[in-house]
Image (tube, rainbow, N blue to C red; front, top):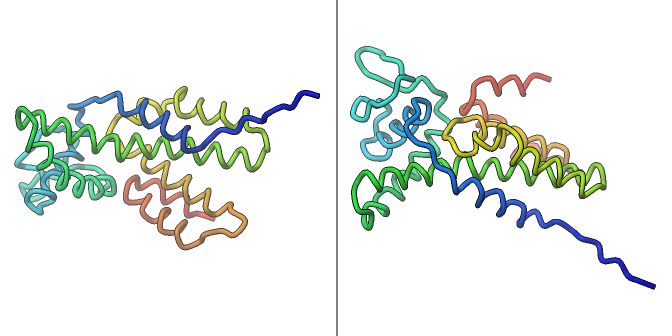
Length: 205
């Protein structure tokens, strides 16, 4: 008799594979990203919400002569502490201030877009494997999402789409457990609205 060894996919390995893939790419200079990064920097360095000092984006509004991003604030509020911690660190060894800026922007983008996208793919894999009992099918769909859909380019940009999607799907995942985790799911759903206002539609029964 020949014994067959079943192959089991590790969610940690899947997460690592996708995270490393997303970390390789970096795009900078788009209005959407600049508006968020400039406000994160203003919050971290000056405790201010306006972006007049670093104004380099067309995605803005002006109120009483002061300029602000025209974005939901959720992802920016998460980016500000990252800028506060890592920008001084990068400045300590970077060849120039511009290099430190780009390294910080890359890290923030990876942390708030790349990692959430990898987490969505892993949760999708675990969820489908539990529901279908078909690991190969679950892995195929998860990789198709992570590497073969528009989620891939958005994972490398500091747009709010992937963070919002991660918050929503994580909440769904918690609600579909055998013992639904209502409070954490509610917190995730609530914060998703601060990242993309249309996420409020998820609250409609």
